[in-house]
Image (cartoon, rainbow, N blue to C red):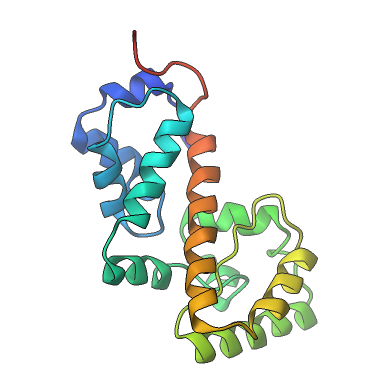
Length: 178
């Protein structure tokens, strides 16, 4: 991963450079960065996070749904084989999902299959700062939810993921010049 940018640098990127730097913040959905870029300049880091989140929240249903579908299964086969996005891989490793026992992997796999069959999209959880046990507890609790609850929860978790990823890529100081 490259060095974090200052917010002042973020505000001076061309739209193409901005999308190049932040197009992968929302899993395989560069349209989020494109829409957030149009909301510059950002007065502070919180304004940048809110711009990305607003891009998601104000998007049409079909784009939101495609964003949900773009997320990998947690501790799924793709993660185990190392074929997920670099940030997803780092986040899952940070939560210990790369060191699951065979029994834990099978439990995740069973829950992923059950959840996906019930809702038609992957279980999404912002794993930064969480343990595999917290993730499994959330999984067990949410698999019995309603479609409306889970869609809203998936979007809320994506908003958290976006915030965590932006915190890693952009320093907190240096907003717009007054």
